[in-house]
Image 1 (cartoon, chains in turn purple, cyan, brown, red):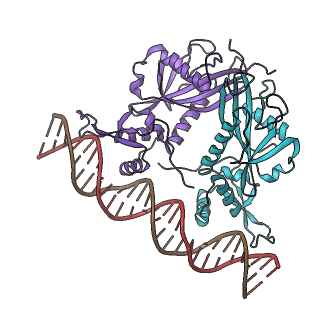
Image 2 (cartoon, rainbow over the protein chains, first blue to last red):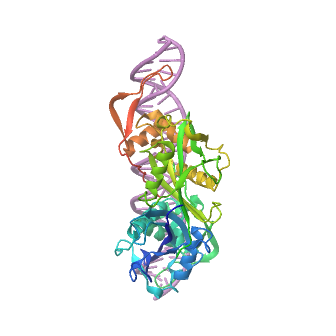
Image 3 (tube, chains in turn orange, green, purple, blue):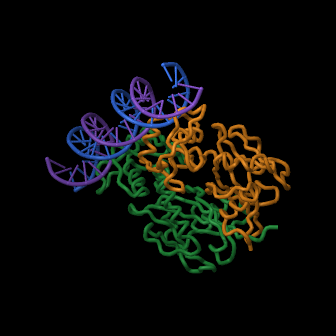
Length: 222
Length: 222
DNA sequence: GAAATAGTGTCTATGAGACAGTATATA
DNA sequence: TATATACTGTCTCATAGACACTATTTC
């Protein structure tokens, strides 16, 4: 028989606030590392959870109230050293949410949104998990619709471009970006819908939405 | 306390024989599914394995005699239904090996090399794992040095091109391929070394090797 | 020299970046 | 009308594909 292994799920949840990528951290309510900010995580409960993804969604809902957000498996971290309680497995997830959906959660429950690049030292091996999540986000952002999941369901082309720029950390060419998006055909216009023009935004912009609710990866030639 | 969870590792090991991608299957020596071909797998042993990757290497060595081959984590499969023994987690790995290194293992231990695309139905959720492994291989092959790990440490440009073609399942342009490889700078010439000319191979080809022992991913612009 | 495979040079097509110019809103 | 942002058109440059041509081996 196999010796006991602790099986947990951790979620690296990102959002964008004022053009800066932020990672959600939550004060741990229990030992070990009680009181310290860490990734959102918890045990898998075999009696309750159909699989690890269901566990991740349950834990997200329990701890932040969020549901129906973008979630994909990142990778699994394991070993004798990463958790003081013993040999453990953490199935890590990457989650993206538009900031607006996060507002109600706000400052509740000791939640903070730490700017990526200025993360505090994290307990367990959450530094490694966070680094892997950022890397996945950056690399996959370059060839998929992933950054769009940081936006509301309807968004303008400038907002979409900003999301890609934030994720990839570099400026993009405007006309090339629009051409690419048009060619890829992953978004569609929302008929007759324009963003409101405000004091800051002069000409209103066309609204778009993703054609597919799911992540779409672009082709890549060798 | 957490209810018991079974924690295993499964390895999808690929090689190329005569230009066809093949997946290693091994007859299961024990229940459940005893006698049926399946991915190479086994329990994690917390007392012995430092982490899941170490467990994968141990299991590969035990069951096939292979060590020091390309191995990377694929993804983790979990749930109540996938294993009749109970709620389980399988951390799946992708492994690549040149056929030559496999020859000594050969037909031993009920090992077969099934042609990808003609795989038999597999036990557990190994069909899904195999499908995910093939997909990872194909997509990552297009933008990394991954296919080179199906070759011997020294290889010719035509062999490298064949490896990429086999992995990606489509023909590549010869001169463009050479240019790309030269530009990427991931391989280097083996000084003065040429492949032997045989009755079949007329002009001998320059030998190359990877500059980096590790996987290198190429850049991608949006 | 014929045949077969290895390797190079160059033309063309495609797609990204640069950037000027047009469009539409507010004040 | 001035200004700011949204959007389009077009030029240029980089890179991939096509393919003809050269090189080196065996028989």
